[in-house]
Image 1 (cartoon, rainbow, N blue to C red):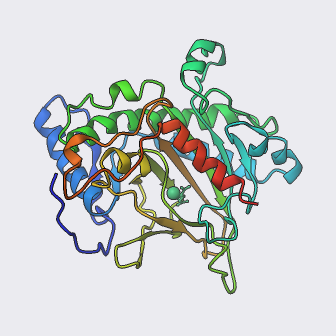
Image 2: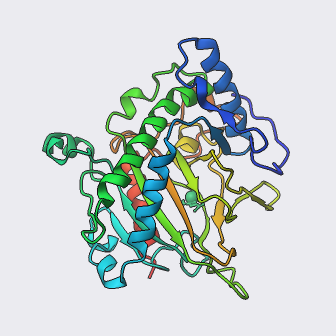
Image 3: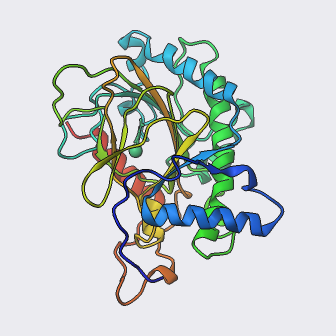
Amino acid sequence: MSRTPNPAFQSIPIMQEALDLTNISSPNPEDRRTLAQEVRDACINVGFFYVKNHGIPEDFISGALTMAERFFSLPSEDKMEIENRKSPNFMGYSPLLSGNNDPEGGGDLQEGFEFGWEELEQSSISDESKKEAGAMAGSNVWPTQVPGFREAVLQYYHAAVKLGKSLFPIFALALNQEEDFFSDKTQHSAALLKLLHYPPQTGPVDERVIGIGAHTDWECFTILWQQPGIEALQVLNSEKQWIKAPPIPGTLVINLGDQLARWTNDHFKSTVHRAINRSGVRRYSIPLFFGTDYNVPLEAIPSCVSETNPYKYEVITAGEYVKSRLQATYNHH
Ligand SMILES: O=C(O)CCC(=O)C(=O)O
Ligand SMILES: [Fe+2]
């Protein structure tokens, strides 16, 4: 694919008019292709876009938010029982300042709770499917102190995973590939959900310690729900300006991560972003990081490689890549 320089973006598409996902699984291929073209433009120019009619019911969102509020209000000792550093895959609770997404930073001023794929009905998880899902799945830890927590957050998770699964064919079309290009690579839903709580940051702010420091995401794409009414997220353009990506009611933000940048040899952008909560009140957000399966090698699609745009990345499996980034982020002390 040819590369033409693009001007620095000044706002996030499609902020005025979020991309309408009503046709995401339309039986009419033309509808899907039209959507894919819009996605393609956003992926090449910005790496971030808003979507509406995304299919996640509002009450699943409010259910997950309520549980996040209850969980993060627990005493620290309760939360530390499931600290992520006790888990081989960093599942569970990450306290304030325990993670550091920006190597130049002094820790992220957020606390989180992370988990991966799990059926709602616990009995139906077979050991075999856990094993195949690789080291990034199948070993969640749950707080025991908040009744209904697991069910409510898994309900949101499964709705968001469904949305993510229906986005993969659109990304494939946007890359001029067959719609099922990612199907064999996403059999086990390597999707990690993180509940995030950002306490307010008032007074003078040390730029090295903000809600989440400048970083890119590590998976293919992220489906991000932001709490309405509180601005925090900012996205870096090519002129090194921070562009606001405020919450817009009824929408979600989709942003690309490093795996899609690697699949496309940077044709699609994994764009640097950060969050700072200066609102004076607590802020919650819920990213779902959607990657390919653990053992899938991240190899550039041949049409994205040319003499003028040679291979940029060493091939590594999706799971090893994410795991190495988790280690770097949580072992920074
Ligand atoms: O809280 C947000 O708005 C962004 C979170 C984020 O970028 C992340 O967790 O990777
Ligand atoms: Fe992020």
